[in-house]
Length: 149
Image 1 (cartoon, rainbow, N blue to C red):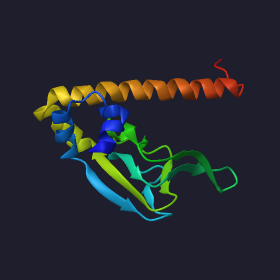
Image 2 (cartoon, helix red, strand yellow; image 1 turned 30 degrees about the horizontal axis):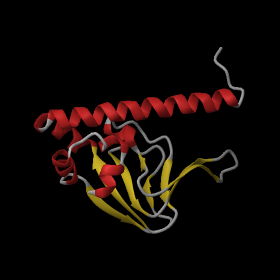
Image 3 (cartoon, rainbow, N blue to C red; image 1 turned 180 degrees about the vertical axis):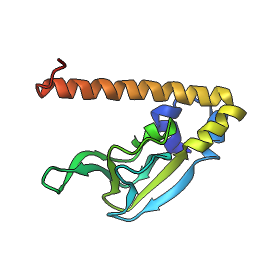
């Protein structure tokens, strides 16, 4: 449950609320080189890293993988899957033996019915994180000289 406390999506939850979430996440183990998910697959879950390291990659123009980010314990990935099943925009691959918690959209949707206050707190934090990441992406594009017409 400690890694959940440190994840921004769950930081505003009480200990009691965190226990409810801990009861619906699934522990997963990945070997080095194994994919948590691949680009263009429909998203079903987000992953919170407990231990190990994950590389976020996309196919490069030359066919080789281009690395977008390296994630370590307490980071999370795939959060858009909590909202819908839109295809993944990148792949997530374990760079070493990795332990993660999977939080599935179906479980969040069920939580909306059974524990709406908890689910709404999670969704509020999710919207904040998505907004921050969008702003960071926009700033990165702007700094590279890409401007809106």
